[in-house]
Structure formats: structure tokens, C-alpha cells
Length: 442
Image (cartoon, rainbow, N blue to C red; front, side, top):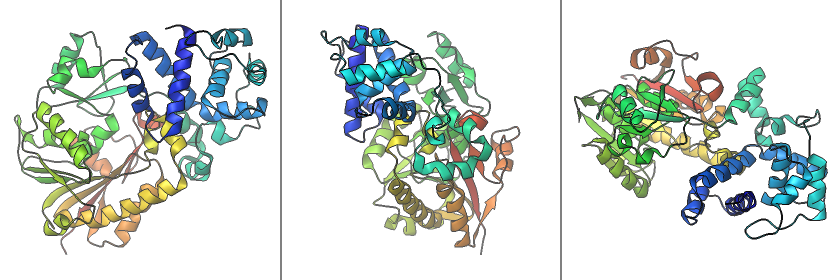
């Protein structure tokens, strides 16, 4: 594809993404699946520019409003601003891309050419009048919340959340060791490194299709961020226990729990994966089979108030609640999600989280643990939810998760307890929160 054709593809994909609420990675996957003529280099270049524009959307929009007052913010004007500010192209070079030839974007209008001219060669990307929410690329309505959470670390945390994430792999101990996985990947010219915390993780920045590797096909590895692995390890699921993964989704943590509960190569105990989506649980079954995690029970719930919960009161030694949330901790991977997020979404998630905590806690036996986790950085979904639950549940108390970290993961915990708050800036992981609550006999 020519550079102009690539740019047309960027504009078209961004237009598709703007029309709905589909995640950006699904938009790009579908776009390229329908355009097999795009080579691997084309796909990488197009995807890189799409994600760069989305990561810098607040700044690009600010500049468009400043120097393109008669222009709307559209994928086309975002591309013009991106080429000038991020690729440092001058107006003639931009005009060469917007040349109107076959498969290339139409010629620039006078207003668009004016925008390109105004932005060309600029290096003052952070003028003093640019709001902090724009400089650091987050929704303005979260400004007070984020400053309360991070204080003088706000810039460091937001800049880290705006960087592309590495690819983390969890080694499936049901199928082999970390060294087995490393050797298998090396045979296919992939050189992963270990990660700072999870003893069963490997990391790579390579743009690799892992689904085509022998290690993946044989179930030896799963793609899973290190923070997500840590949450599963902190659950401390052991052979012989009854463990419920209450919001199992597609099963990433279920697979990790199954490996923790294995004796030899077989699951020992009872592991129940629950979700309100039968479709997600159906997708999990193939992953369980490939991973060799036989014996996992899947259960579709009507809601968090399903009658099965009361019927199963006190059955579980461990209940993991990786609850639905805003996903603010995963902005490295899904930068588009931050711009779709609205205050009403936060309130909806908070209501769901409160309900799940209240009802799923009935499953925990005396002496058992309730592990509450989110991939959010917002206090309303994390500390505030746990404190509210504890105020109304006198039979639960907080365990110091930093001590559990030493026992299950090993080494000193990189953050202060009693709850675990991870982030790209502090731990090099996605943003995650985890609280471990124990039920005391009454």
C-alpha cells in the first residue's frame, strides 16, 4: 500500500470506531480481516498511527480547536494534526498524502491546509494554557478524582498509562515450566524476558501473533497481563479447595486458578467458573481444553442474585470477584475506552459492584476468603467499595495482602498494604486493585 492509501485506511478505521461503542482492537481486527490485501507492514503502520492518534486525542483536538476554528474534529482533521505534530511533516508533505489519487484521501480544503500550515514545525506541544487533562490525556470530568488519588504523582501515572503496553504471558504449569515455555518460544525466534513479580510470567515487546506458536497451541502459555496473574496468585487457591471465580468472563483467571489447584498435572478440588454470559463461558471451554484444565465446572448465572448463590451458601474456601468496572487501569491497551467513558458508566458499575459484593459473599465459608479485584484506578470502585462492604458485613475483615504476597508470590510487595494497588508507573503492570477479606466464624 502507498503511504496515501495507508492514511485512507487510518481515516476509515477511525470513522468506523467513531460510529459505535466497539473496542478499537475489534475495529482494527475486523477491518483487516476484510482487507486481506494489506500486508503485515501495512497493518502494523496503520494500526500504529490509529493508536497514536487515539492516545493523543485530547491534544490533537485542542490544537484543532485552536487553529482550525472553522473545522470539526473528525478522523480526517485528527490525521492532519497528527501528521504535523507527531510525525513533524510540513504542509507540502501532508498535501502529497492528501492527493486525491486512487486509494488516497481527497485533496485538502483551504481550511485544512491552513490547519496543516499552522501546526507545521511546532514543538511547543505543552503551552501554559493547555489544561492538565489535555496535557496528560484523560477525560476532564475525572480531573479531581485522579488528582486526589495520585497527587504529585499524577503526571508520572498518566504518562505511564498513555504508553503502549508490553505483551505478558502466563506459563501454564499444568503443561510445563517457565523454562519450557522460554525454550519453545526461542525455537520460533521469540526471546521473552521474565517479569519483576509473577514467578510464572514472561514478557515480550515483539509484535508477535502468539496464537500461531507451538507454545500457545499446546496450551503452555496464555496472554495475560502480569497484574491479572498476581490477582489470581493472591487468591491462594490450593489443591483440595472449593474455589469460585464469580465473574469469570472468558476465563483468564479461571485458568490461572486451575493451575494453582493442581497436584501434578490434574486439578484437585472444585473450581466453579460463573458468569452471566453463556457466550463468554462457551469461549472459555475451548481454552480450558487446550490448557488441560479438566474438571472445571462452568455455571451461567441469571444475575448476581441468582438463586444458586443462596442454595450454595458457605460452600467456598475462596471466592474471587474480578468485578465489572470502568477499566481505567487498562488504558495502555485500550486508549479508546477512556474517551467513551462517561460519569453514568461509573455509577452503573458502582451499583453492580456493590450488589455483587453483597450477594457473592454468601458463598464464602467460615474462615474462607473473599478476594475483590478491579482493573480500575478509581477509589469509588476500589477502596470505597471495600470500606462500604465492611461497614455492613461485620463477619468479614481485611487481611494484609502484602503478607499474602510474600507467601504466594515471594519477595517484598512493591506497594503498601493492606490492599494492593498496582499501576504502570509503580509496578509496570496494568492498573489493578485487590483486597483480600476473610470471613470469621460468628
